[in-house]
Length: 510
Image (cartoon, rainbow, N blue to C red; front, side):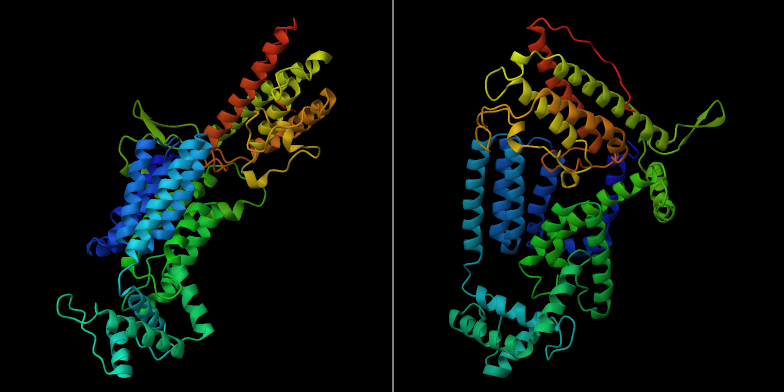
């Protein structure tokens, strides 16, 4: 790999979250707001693990449910965590467990959301926040994002003074609360215009990807929004759409009408810090790739983050960062170590050789398969289906991501099905492809193999396929194992018919 993922992630997370003075400043606020962190933490845990065991899942459901009951505005983030958990569990083929777990999670989260929002003055709180939120960026008669502004407007309209004392005040009085909700709803309509609503919503959204709304410092709101725009761009360019959706879910429950003050950003800060650490990893990996035509200016820009790499090496003691051009002191002399560019090329050459060898052995299986064996086998695990399944997924998983895959021109989706309980149903019994068809497909894969592997970023922290939450290099090794397993199946079927086959150790594609 071209960079030490764990090292850079630890350092970036420490700087962006652990010792971030802005986070420390607001974390000391009453821990009521802390509970918004729980769904985010559960999401990050799921994304960092290959397999989620049911006891851990049960603890996660309990914590997320409790966070929704205490802090109802985290409900959309909790729902997104539930969706991600369902996807991960289904990917583990534990469908009954996934169904039961998702049902329990939905019931628990839904019940706690109802309980959490059943406060008698919840409507008044919403109307209050929506009204004073108009004062975040000026342009209206609402002068500031202060509770006193809303209470003063209510008193001006009704003559009633709001007292929020939990013992002797009138804020909890249902009659006063209901009237407050109605009056402040009218006040909002009197001051809000479509342009102001859209402007505030956009600025709030961008600041949800930054440090949040600078309370009592309206002049810095534009700077915070600019930083949020930069964060959103970094996450989008590095393909971290799961984090983008999670941050938007945290924003959506309040951000369209109320600025994201730091107290409301607990659930987003941890996601932003994690997202930036991943983005830094992926940007750093670009520095380690061999340069191609047109990349010169990009490399110069990205070279600005080299000091971070140097800082990482010195701060993380005991970390052997093989990916960078370090020097070792041996016998009193400095000797350069192998550059990461060469290591990356060696890895890609090795992958090409093993892909080529596996495809060569698959070609021999197809070429030497007797006519009566081509469609033989218990349906749907027939010889030709195993062969096509192998070719298709070798091709598919050799792509940088699932969105960049273009199927073979003659692809038939049912051709890859090897199980009679597949979610797409039982495929037809008829033979779809002849040996010559699959040899043509195999030749097309071999022809493009070298270019496809060269296009891979083997230092990427994600595979590009959401159901495989592993680094890109690991995923390529999985793909080669998959190819080898099915070639072995076909060889055994041919051995049983007296067909002797050759072993290929390595074959570099032309």
